[in-house]
Length: 499
Ligand SMILES: *[C@@H]1O[C@H](CO)[C@@H](O)[C@H](O)[C@H]1NC(C)=O
Ligand SMILES: *[C@@H]1O[C@H](CO)[C@@H](O)[C@H](O)[C@H]1NC(C)=O
Ligand SMILES: *[C@@H]1O[C@H](CO)[C@@H](O)[C@H](O)[C@H]1NC(C)=O
Ligand SMILES: *[C@@H]1O[C@H](CO)[C@@H](O)[C@H](O)[C@H]1NC(C)=O
Picture 1: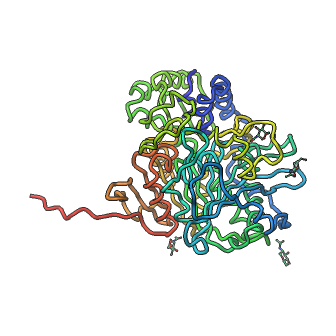
Picture 2 (picture 1 turned 90 degrees about the vertical axis):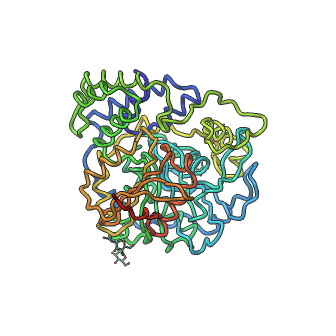
């Protein structure tokens, strides 16, 4: 069976599938995906609703301010001059196991003392926030086609916040564990627990951020990570003497929220965007049951196979973008155009695997026995628990007065805007501000609807799965309004007179 519909269906978002095409392990990854699809319908995965995470005792400080100075990144190979400070290094999340997470932190160019702290997480599970978030989405630099020099992302999010990127869980990117059996614990619960332990220890190293307004952002499978970490923080803020984390809100894009509506929305999107036939969608509706207790029927499997053949080799993460056809690095950097280069993954891969780059980043200090990969196949294949939905967590945040924003790049077919709208519908929210366009740079940036309880939904027009890659200006406008707590800008239409 071909790849795309499986990918849409499995709903753990295997960015790595796409990447592995680029890096040439295509066959293995398709096998891995088939396995996951089967697993996702099998009973050994914990599908129960979310329960508070394991109690984490008061964390002994195993991180210190001295370490912060050692983490300053003087200069990344090939970078243009900049006015802000960058840090990179390891924070231990479990001392006895020898488990440490790699982080990259960019302070704001201006007003770093007053701007909030923003954590960014990519999904997968198994994908790197350094390779995607930092180097291709919201970070200050992007990699040129030579794989060794960097240019400035003029719409970087450190115009609006101090931005922290975390490679998580262990096994992703430069993050590692010295205990090999840790691989058997990959899942949502252990990830939330480790992410929380990371934050507590990171704040010991950067105590000036301890009381700062804190927000968590992310995309795709981070639609699980972000709410689960936020839930863990709320729980510990209330029940333990751990450092109080000043969590104010979360923002997630093209996010996995609720398996049933996510799956249904994905097929409906494909048909409504003329990528599969009406007949095939009818078959999917007839034979596929995406509810929590259902098993995958052979007729559904067949319908998905047809869907896949019809879809063919497009980039499911941006249905209108070209695919990468020549992944070779160039001797001289290619000129940067407004359109995103579909081979960016390869440039980033080359850059982050350069020994001098790793040294400058203070990464891979234990000389890991494998390359830096944008997504880890091992992590995603061994994923052992995930709840069916995170809607209950979003409701918890609204009840606790956190700011909750959910955005959606509208040309993504993997977690498309239809899926997100179905999930929001399932929440039965009361509309506060009815659907309307929002504006940036005199253009419609997308559409927004605001609900009672401080939940904002916003689409980003013309953006694929990685919204800030495809529409950086719109994404920066979005995050700025989110962080400021201001509504997305709107110019009401001139009064109509009807004759
Ligand atoms: C993992 O093992 C290496 C080699 O013994 C050691 O240098 C490193 O500090 C260990 N990592 C952690 C987090 O304990
Ligand atoms: C928090 O600290 C106080 C004072 O040291 C102590 O009495 C209390 O039991 C602690 N609470 C928890 C949950 O550890
Ligand atoms: C770490 O360094 C070793 C030795 O230079 C290299 O072979 C390996 O690919 C690197 N791994 C990662 C994850 O960067
Ligand atoms: C919504 O946000 C406003 C302004 O930030 C705040 O005053 C209000 O309490 C919030 N409402 C709820 C229901 O959380």
